[in-house]
Length: 266
Ligand SMILES: Nc1ncnc2c1ncn2[C@@H]1O[C@H](COP(=O)(O)OP(=O)(O)O)[C@@H](O)[C@H]1O
Ligand SMILES: CC(=O)N[C@@H](CCC(=O)OP(=O)(O)O)C(=O)O
Image (cartoon, helix red, strand yellow):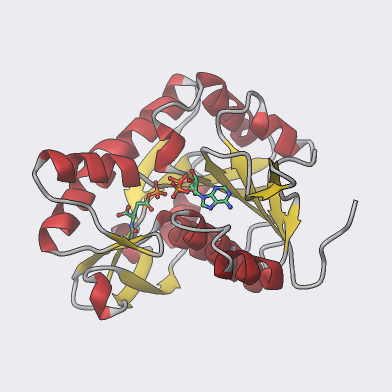
């Protein structure tokens, strides 16, 4: 098996990713790299909830998930978003198969903090099904849901799921695709991408409110993945043409999350 790469595709961009993104992904898969996708779908879940008259509620980027919200999350993530990603890869000439963390008990969880409702705390990622699909030449496309030992299903933030999957597979690289060019900060009145960040810097940026909302689980998942021997985590913009080819070529794009004290200064 060659390189393995986990790509987290955020719901913020999924609807608008250019076809070239999936073509580049397929080219990677057909080369030396096994690609695994974990997808989000937060905006689509929120839209469906609003259509049903339910107001979405988040705490630090995590959705408060009561029973009706869990049902909507399952419907949207498994029934719609997952299959859209699978068909996009297939339209680009690739082979893909969609699962969720429930299938093959791939993501085992316990109940997370009570105030979040049915949000799972990941205990273990069982890589067998992912590896079987990769071994069959498929891109595994994983929806961020988990299951506990009683069979209860839980919602999981997709960044957290992607970090845990990358850690369990021991991949070299985790790439988080979102709708901004990286972690940004206003410096001298100009919004700039921060090219590298370590844990201390990230915690300071969260405390200062520079990193907020959906970016919080993203950077925390990146740090967790590094702690599980993933070598590199990148946060990049899915709208940027040719972004995956740049990543594959080792070009400096987006924000790289690095181990403590390993920030290189330009
Ligand atoms: N410092 C920051 N730099 C860039 N984006 C940030 C920052 N802090 C918070 N964000 C927000 O995080 C969002 C990306 O997270 P999220 O909406 O959850 O995307 P995704 O669906 O891709 O996971 C950005 O669109 C932006 O609104
Ligand atoms: C617990 C929790 O927050 N689950 C997320 C799962 C989807 C997700 O994370 O989607 P994005 O990557 O598009 O944000 C949610 O319900 O929105």
